Image 1 (tube, one colour):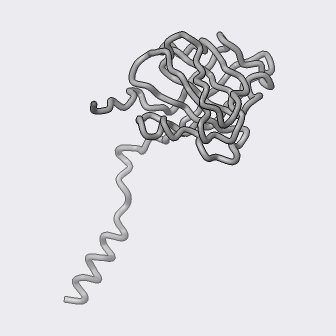
Image 2 (cartoon, rainbow, N blue to C red; image 1 turned 60 degrees about the vertical axis):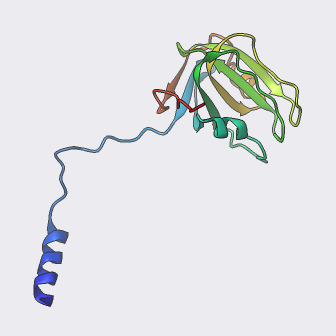
Amino acid sequence: MIFRCALISTLIACQSPDTSAAASPVTPPQASFTTAKGNVAIKLEIADTQKTREAGLMHRKSLPKDQGMLFVFSKEEDHRFWMKNTYLHLDMIFVNAAGKIIGIIENAEPGTLHTRGINQPSLYVIEVNGGFCRRYGIEAGTPMSLVGIPEKPAIEPW
């Protein structure tokens, strides 16, 4: 019995992996902006549920310069943000369903309850370190693309 178990284990270990269905590489979520200063790409954390959107970047002491958070909503609306329990100055980039930057709020003041928005419907909002947009020349209309994000935002129960 021991010999049979050892033989079966050896046969299983020696089988070649199934390569008929090649694994497709997973693209990490990122945003890429095409500016007069060149292409700029950032890695994105995704906030696509009510809980993750509410938490956002609260309580963070730092954010790497090549990272941001993408807020994904279930429909285009006039989304508004506050900076409660947020310790960082942030730029907020509002993007419509067509993937066009339609507005930016620069250097939102940390720790405030004042709500901020652009008075236009957006489907996505990207938060990055304050000064990011000015540094790279990102403004409304700057060409951009989102890669590796959920195709359909999470639909949440009532």
